[in-house]
Length: 111
Image (cartoon, rainbow, N blue to C red; front, side, top):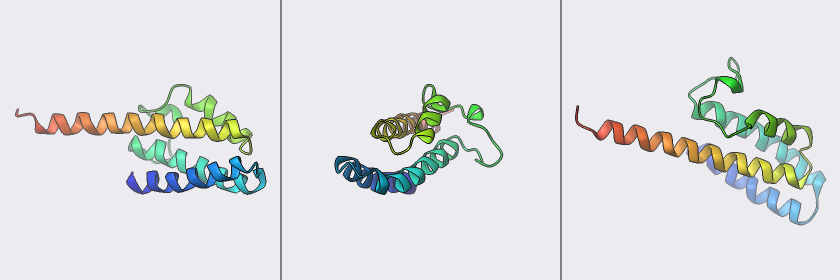
């Protein structure tokens, strides 16, 4: 997961710069890559294969993820889409961290 989040941090910095400069043309391919990275993160953080599962199969997911992802995917060159994608990453990261912490606590408990 660290690799995915590291890659997102790079995309996030680049997208922030492009949107600050109002350069939608340069932001567009980065946004498309970042959207695919989010999908990968969503499925991997749920321990699922992206090719054989659907978003509905994910137990850990942000609220209204399907609708929000459809919005982002349909208009990736908009600043609002970038902000929404950043929120999706943040929410999924929190859910994954919570799950990892619960597993760690569970494993430390004596039976």
